View 1 (cartoon, rainbow, N blue to C red):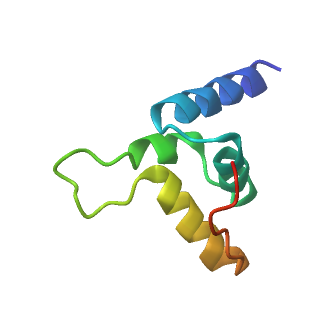
View 2 (cartoon, rainbow, N blue to C red):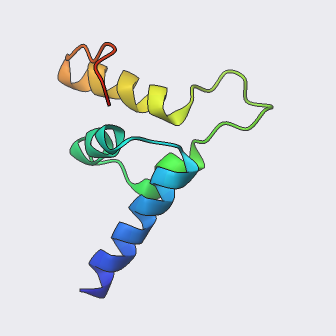
Length: 74
């Protein structure tokens, strides 16, 4: 029971720090990503080559599930 609470808190932290929508969180969970990996991949100003986390999730999701996400509403 306590483990699920901790996991939910980590997802909430990733939601806030990465500025993700509920849809992006759902996509990350479907792909089996863990919230710490999302937080770890937040680009800092020196990492101009890194995509923002939300774009990174969308790119991986499209590659893995061959679905075009497009600009559907969040």
